[in-house]
Image (spheres, one colour):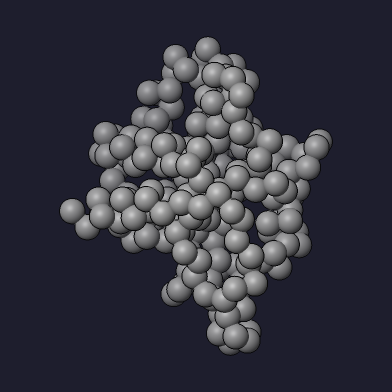
Length: 188
């Protein structure tokens, strides 16, 4: 029952506005309404494939939003090495981990896992779907990023037809027909 409450809290608190990263501390929960359904679907699939997500991992996932530029979003955290989602870039989304580090000054943030840490999923705004095919691709991307954030999965480099492949599928009929098999692989 506590994990259901956390899920409800995660999905109920939404905001369309982008927050300033200058405020110190763990962010409030923020889930874009267009992405909320994918989070719900991911958690239901995890349960279906007997891989329930620990409530602590769900609690750490604080933000799931579209961002105009992934490089700008990373720069707001001081991560200058992040790839850009600008035209020509192949980065469509990212799972980030951040932590408040009081030893670096009042509420300074740095990238690592630890106490007071949280995860965020950022999706490039150019991934907003206009067609059924784009919605399938966004679902694949969301499951990929949630695979990083909630399952701790790394990329699967030598398997182009895997949700954790670093490249998104452009074979939409195949993706739709094989979705259950892809989920079984993701959650094993």
